[in-house]
Length: 178
Image (cartoon, rainbow, N blue to C red):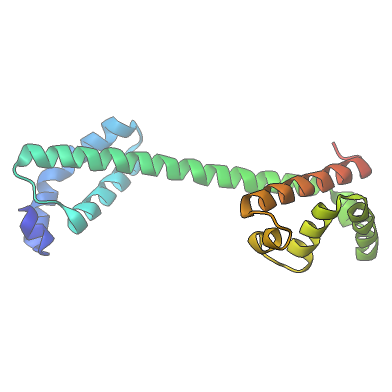
C-alpha cells in the first residue's frame, strides 16, 4: 500500500486514512493530552506527511511504529510552535508597556530628543558610539559594522546590545523611569 500511496494512488491513500485515522487520533491524544482540536491538527499534519513521504514498510506493525514516531514529533513541534507564539505575543505586549515608560521622552520635540541623544553619545566609548552611529545612523548591518571596526559578527552584536542597554539605562535615569 505504501508504494501505491507514494505513486499518488488516491484510493490507496483513502483506504490508509480510513484505517489509520482513529488510531492516529488516539495516539495524538495520548501523546499530547490536549483537546480534540489540537489532536485533529496533529492528525491532519501526520496524514500530509503520509501522503508526501510514507516509506515502504513491511507490515502493519511497522506502519504503526512509524506513525507513532511521526505523531510524537508532530505533537512536539506543534507544542513548541505554540510556546514560541505565546512568547512573541508576550514580548510584543511587554514592548508596548516599555514605550509607556518613556512617555515623557516621546512628548519632547525631535530637536530636544536629538540634543539629549547626541550628548549621551558623546559620553560613550568611541567604539560603542561608532557602532551605534553606523548601525542606526547609516543603516549598516551588524556584520558590516563589526567588520569596519575589526570585530566579528557575534562580538559586534554583543557590543551593540550592551551599548543600547547603556543608553536605555541612561534614559531611565534621566526621565526617572522605574
